[in-house]
Length: 86
Image (cartoon, rainbow, N blue to C red):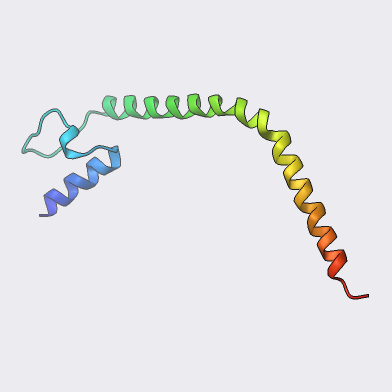
């Protein structure tokens, strides 16, 4: 039971599920460091690529966010002034 828990924990750390493996050995599970390095490089590259792709949308919508923030801030000041006792 302990070996199974260790096995599933190790797979979860890699982001894998049991049926995604190509083969199964009864020995201690050992993935080569090159496999782990390749997975790290792939995921980092994917993260950077998706982050760069979202920059265009963020820049185009930035004025909308700023105007929305300023409108809510002005509305808050107006409400505060109206509800202040004289």
